[in-house]
Length: 330
Image (cartoon, rainbow, N blue to C red):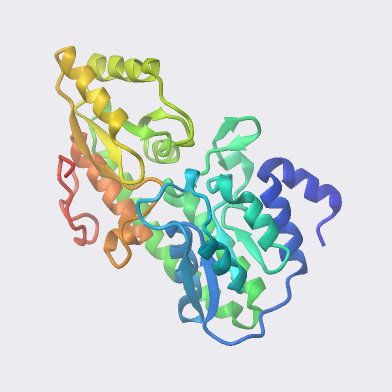
């Protein structure tokens, strides 16, 4: 059992939802029901991890859909009903689903609730002030491998009878993620150094920048709840014009209004900058598509970024499965 002091120390890092997580998982009993059990995940990236580890043992329900901003999401009655009927619940954590925190606390009194980022050491995380950390860990594939390890441990605790199966599935999926990480390093490393600058709607790509050697700038902050002001737009227009950057990027789950203001501002100062493509930031692609998987999401992003900023990447991505990677968003 975790000591009360240990709980308090981790509470300082992960907040109230982290405390709920510790209390429920410590008391959780091994699963003894039928299969597939009901697993509920918040965002697609989390659901993808759980599905790859659980395999046919679980039926995954995802609450926050493709193209939906988790920072601003409020759970509906049907979401709460799904959580209450779940056998096990997974969320990203680090306040990505900030408005759902109270819901997780309540649900955790009745069933196991796990944050996939819970086992990532604070030293690995990017601080954003006030004792909080940037939640967009999945943008660094090595960081998401750490989240994969947490899911393997969580499911092995929840359904200990099938621990060996979950560990084997985790090992298989980790090999796929290692291949993805190597591809990202290769194609993003091909971008000429002066052009290794990516500007997006909000600060969702700092882990990607740290991992793969890009300078990243967002118009809004870590959370899309923050408002971008005229000074923020003008500051980035200055950077675009001064560095003669070829492209900026829009995101599937965030309005493109501010990014288009950058383009207009640069044009007014004599520099033409294109929309380099639409990136997946806080949500994956549509369910049932390659981009609707974590591997496809990151493949799309790094391929799009590399091609837009002057690097070299195959048009259809790492596995030749991308639907469309063009230099202009649709």
